[in-house]
Length: 158
Image (cartoon, one colour):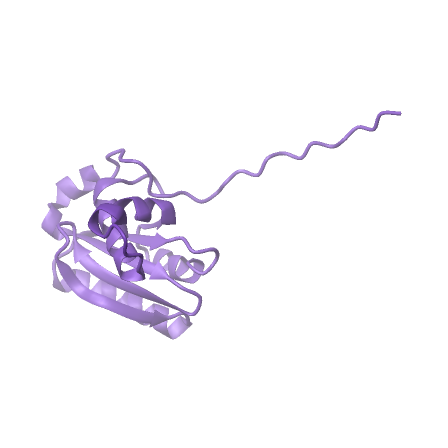
């Protein structure tokens, strides 16, 4: 006797990545001028993350800073980013958070709650942009810089 098997519907991925260049943020950058467009790149880990703020050209505005994954640390980070953006006349910005299992979720949630345009970056994509800059060196600092470079070239809707 033949038994039938139930087919389960495929799970649809709900996350979106910054992918191949599609020019989605170029219009935004053009409207505010690149020196007034901020890029916040975050490299996440289990208990703490390292983040930095720079303009579209790569001029570092806030040096790489460590933030603990607790409510106070994440709130302080978003407040500092908002205050610095106003102080430096950055009228538009984007947050690039490198995906790391589930460890990037608190940072992603904190920036979205604070009203920032937050995108996730797949580790393979940051690897693609890291390779020409640092061919044999895999460090989180290089990955964070790669996220910044990748945002300059590519984006999709969040």
